[in-house]
Image (cartoon, rainbow, N blue to C red):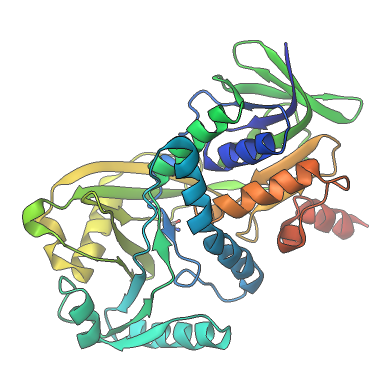
Length: 386
Ligand code: GLY
């Protein structure tokens, strides 16, 4: 039996940042995860794409995304200072291009929407896009240059967060959680797969999509998150081909997002499918084919590069695509999950918001995160039944 102020279930980047920030504020913290630093961040490309991934109707989420993007320079500098590890944060900007006249009209609308919200985004002709990125296909019809959408390397970020958490005194229970424990209507911790009980004053579910199916909690308390599969490829740019791309390049091809994220170390990440296939994480020939086909339309030279890795991961998606943060209706239980396409982007702001909820006398989220309360769907369900 171990006891902590806080038990964080899940040691992906969201669980790690929550644990680290809570420990920095003087709480004793245990993270339960068989493989801390793993999870969806092992798969993710790490685009910090608040502006280029803007969706109609998601302006509230945009504010949180922008708040988190603005934290990135200090956040990564602090991590590096404390751990000596580089996170691969790169202020490279993004170019979103159109490959046909329909895409062009769609990007024009997106540009008008971005501008109406005061976001920085510049319309470029096809020729100007190719001047910036000479590897682009000759048929590119125009594009949006967004100099504020950067990238980080999620694997390096996870390694730095893990080290920072260890240095801040976070303890790790390298085991899966068998079940969350409830006593007298209050969550009291969890029993690990290897049988040990971890008791805690507060338990934070930060287990990505798994948060929605943890044993021990009544159905109405489980967060409404579902897995959305993403297949992704990694390629290598040999020195003879460098610089292949100097910024993230993306497009929507036949309704699917395709993006190419070039790292300084020569890795080129090509993502990603978005599939509703439950818990399946198979890399399929069809998924790889579609990604390469779409990327080839965007940047024909891609087929020359060595393919080094294929992977699939699960995005934790909530009913409104936004995260579920902070206190739930059950005493002792908080959430940090449901980040869908924005888990890497929202890591800094999630850590700050959860640390505030765990240490403030009211237990409430700070104002910038208050629209993302963990209880919002439970409340809606209750209102429907009244
Ligand atoms: N934000 C990129 C993705 O989820 O594929």
